[in-house]
Length: 363
Ligand code: ACO
Image (cartoon, rainbow, N blue to C red):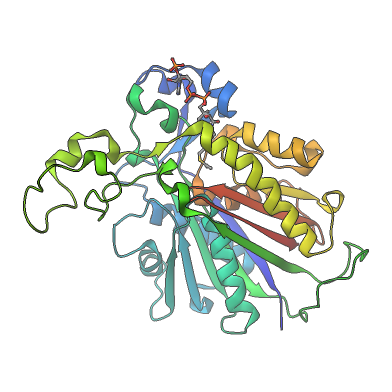
């Protein structure tokens, strides 16, 4: 059985750069507060009537396809991961397929929030390893700026998020899938590609980082907001005037709770990937964590005793782009020559759900 390799990678961010100082014009915040708590200096926002999650994803995909030397007619499956889709349904997978001029092949949409890219990578990996597909296009894109609360009420969430897209082309390596290497095997062993993926979730605190409306829950999971008597006996509970007047149409985050959980689950899932492959933190060439918050990445680095050159951060330029953050960071790291053949690269994510995941790759 072959392994899966990333044959091409691309990224796209919209042209509109929004600095922390720009945000001070619409809400009570400061450059100092945002940089101190999150490490973010600026982010890119989609341009209305020009950029959408699909259009940005397609731009990233075109670059990934060109770098892989793959034409659109050779793609045999599309995976699209986002939590900010153009439409409630259908998903961005078919919209990207149409924009790329492809028909008939399967297109799968994956959510899973900040862990979406690694979940999607894991799904693609299974299809490649079993020989079902030869060229999978995986797109991760987000347009958060269209759905954030830019009043002071929403400032703890809105300053963190940015828009952008990343894409990869997955292909079989052609190499045989080895048994897990024995302890002590050199990291320069020739077996390249995705070594393993590790997926986790725990829904017990699902609302800690969530956007529950518009949803089909009809108040079941927010009993304190349930009216004594429904306005009508059936239907009409999805988008109501009452709902639009409430603040909970925006993302909600219990920041301190997310922080505490993230700094436990990130190191756990990174060590799980290393242990599964009989490797150690010293074997890691680069950790690419989901760009949640620079303080979280720094705490993870500290806990794992990693050197500065072993951890890639670019949240200062893009903010948190949820599912797109890992492929954007991986693409930038690769373009900057920080990812080379045979390097051991760990991708790791933690986010809403809660979900957390890792992937270990020998590039
Ligand atoms: N500008 C200025 N002041 C702000 C802002 C802002 N943008 N946002 C919140 N504040 C204020 C609050 O109103 C509060 O004021 P008060 O003390 O007068 O009530 C004060 O700052 C502290 O608020 P907290 O919410 O307690 O802020 P905290 O110190 O916890 O920092 C933060 C908030 C940065 C979100 C922090 O909790 C954190 O780092 N959490 C991790 C979660 C995270 O980064 N998630 C990223 C997205 S999720 C993911 O990708 C996994």
